[in-house]
Amino acid sequence: MLDIPCVIFAGGKSSRMGKDKSLLPFGGFTTLTEFQYSRLTKIFRNVYISCKESSKFTFEANFIEDAKDTTIFAPTTGFIAAFECLNEDKFFTISVDSPFVDKDIIQILIDADKSSSDATIAKTQEGIQPLCGIYHRSLYKEFLNMQKENRHKLGLLLKNAHTNYSYFTDTDPFLNLNHPNDYQQALALHQSSLQA
Image 1 (cartoon, rainbow, N blue to C red):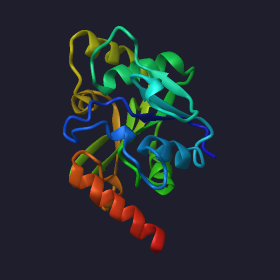
Image 2 (tube, rainbow, N blue to C red):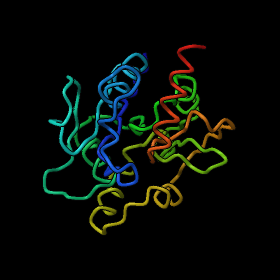
Image 3 (spheres, rainbow, N blue to C red):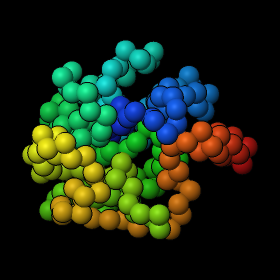
Image 4 (cartoon, rainbow, N blue to C red):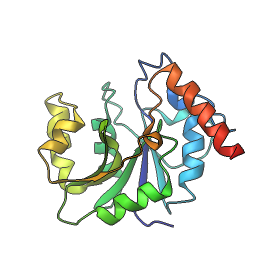
């Protein structure tokens, strides 16, 4: 079991999906969020779910809710809430819609992380995967500035920070469920992995 805390980001707007993707059924679970929570609690000692409102979920978990006074649907608010809730110098971040990021990928990122870094992030030929990696508390003040100035691009934050990148040649595990066809592809992939 990994000691670094894991935070699943499940507070997005899901505008491209057309419905809240964190609530889509997946892998025999009522929601994709519960599927992620269930599998990641087998890897990490402590797993948390970052969200706007925990009442939308029907299962027991450690939830970190965004501040009630914010209407911003961006990871910025989730990072601020996580740093304020967790008494930790760093945590592993994963998006709720990345159900195929496995323990091997997570371990590579953890092994690549340095105490002198602000973040260690997965990268593929498709680009950086900002919601798959480790964020350090050294970025907390910058997240506060970003929210204050209504800037929410994680890519820009990482570009200007001391960021380590771990390159992965296989893009399949980083499939994000952004559109309905991505969701159908993920369901098929999961089903075929069970039959393999």
